[in-house]
Length: 595
Image 1 (cartoon, helix red, strand yellow):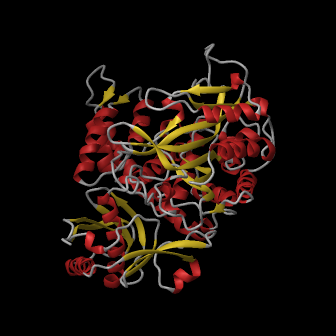
Image 2 (cartoon, rainbow, N blue to C red):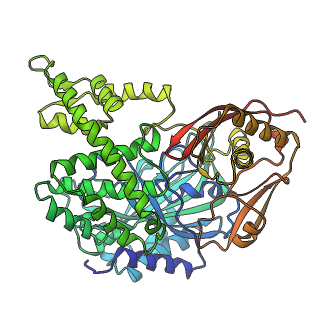
Image 3 (cartoon, rainbow, N blue to C red):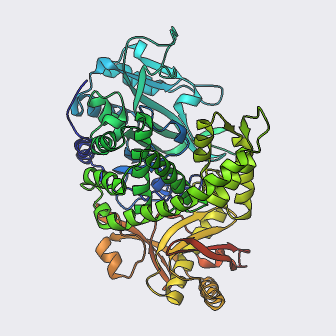
């Protein structure tokens, strides 16, 4: 198929389609995930909705729709091929215990074929085929069959391909049903059993309906959920590319201006390198806009990695000083119709990127000298650079592993990446959990421990505002069953007295046994009652506000304890810098108070 429709037009068609079917539109959540600490960035539309998928009531009801900003870094080495990007938008809609498979599948098919104009004859679908733990999804299979899909284009696949979740070892999960665009009639691998599970490129995924109908228990058994949910996702950029007849996402209208600029100003770079520069600057644009600045740990390290990789390629092409502005502005131009905050933050974003470029330029010259010196020490015939050297280049000169690998490759060498990761893991243990290492906990498990710690963040937030001033705003939150981590806006290191004052205020609030209760209200009502939190959802007519006695009033999705006496003693373990203008507190709850 071929269409001139833009990504912005597809986004609008999608949102309008589901709003007409009684879905409330919600704004994209931040790229900094508050409700799922198993990832550094929001990687799917469901991440900001974890509390509601776990059962908390959403202020806008049981049917929701949005376009969610996402960043995924597990495929970073494949960025620059036809289909992989670091940043992308995921169109999503949800049923929170409302409609289920019949409506979800029927609407999916209707939107794809009638609104977007896909030919049903060029589509294929998959359903879960079942295994020893859970039965096959015959319901979805029969719905697709009833719509008119022939049996040979309805594939029953296994758990790896068509079963989602749970997050962690236990929790909500269920089968999914994916829709694919069929690019050709044959398999390039000549596999007679070619299906969407084959990676020959014949099938390109368009979207996916996840049906959360089971609860997996710690012992490995599955039971039916009393309130099943639907989680739908569709990659906007991929769909726009397919519809335009492009063979690559980098040929879509989102990338047109950036790629044209790079082809004109950096003709010496390969097509793959041009794509990497454009993609990585786009990812940095959005992550910095959401408050994640370059650093050597956690999400900030990912931003540093993608930026420095782009900088090195730009240096190779001798791009002039204006390339950052040109590429950033090209993306702001196509996205600002939906994300108007990009225009407001444009100068600050460019400043942050330029500041990182200057740091890298300084480190690059020094680092290359050291690197070349170390290479002369390689034994004759040795072709593998030690992981310890690669880590030294990272820790001392800020060289991401990818940069060291690329420099090595140019010299016919490779890097012991496994040893690098080991050294980096030790680095993490000494500082904090970071990089792309996953860990358990967070609101996704809704355990008693995380519920208590999440409630404590409300008390901490209010205490910080009382001690430091009302300029304090939450910039990030990460919770495991063992501790809470809270990032907040403040430009100076807290004094010992300030830390003690905050800790005292929180424990006094706990000791007063404040009742915790939820009220659903309009944004104006929340502001009038002094609620703090992010008023970022411009489409939300109503929001959830949690009151902790007369001490704290904050917008939140939950979950929370019923009374502060359940929390126990609050103890601040550390106060430190997170990024420019942002401080971080780590704290624990020692033990629940008696009574």
